[in-house]
Length: 287
Image 1 (cartoon, rainbow, N blue to C red):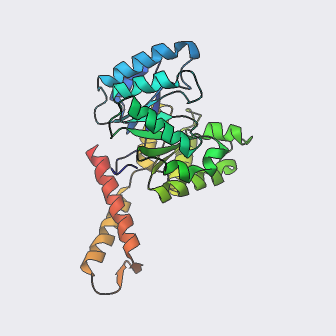
Image 2: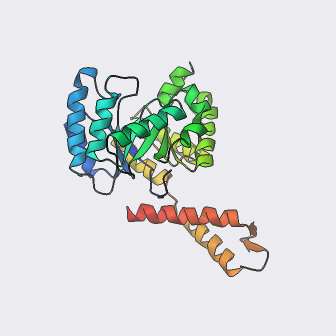
Image 3: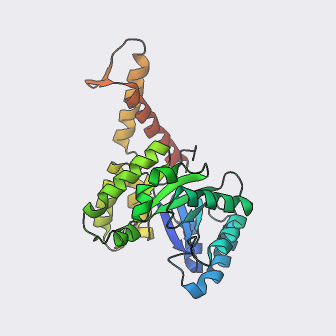
């Protein structure tokens, strides 16, 4: 599990085969960079992309941004070489696609340790199949290395024989089940990508829906999506003022039995929520 509250509002996928994209990522205001060796790389380009991406990460060019390398899946011929090279490069985490069980998480953790991963290197597990959704809590609790769950909504929609529609009704139950599992396990969870990079309004609507559902951020496929994601998944000025007011009311009324703020009764759970809002706002400002 990940004990550090850090913003994951805007993790951006960048193709490991594209040198210009990897260089451009140095200037982008995203919270995290996911260097992709899987979907964004053709089979015959995978070894070259692996070498380029891991050399780039080893040079530590991305400042305070969280850096993740997404390797190819465990059932592919590239997985073990990807994992060994990624661990040697020293990113913050390894993302693995199509994680389907707690046993697979434990195998990934063991493989990372064999490759020499430090104790702080995490696992980002991508939830992309019906089986993974149904076993999401076990996956989330399978290893202390597992720090983030990532919804792979494109693959999940395909596996369900569903359709991409506004509002995402066909996958809403699965999304909510995984948010429940993440919160039960104390794990960060990220929404899947929005495919139409030309539709900024549609992206904002979906991101806001994900924020209200409880997601910590949304994975992105284009730099134009960074700004809206950063804004939507961060506390705004009104939320920060509300959180401060709740905490002040609670602290000034300690021992009185009943505490109210703007006519509403305040309990400890409201105070915990307020403190998390302020902690997230502080982490965003520090970044």
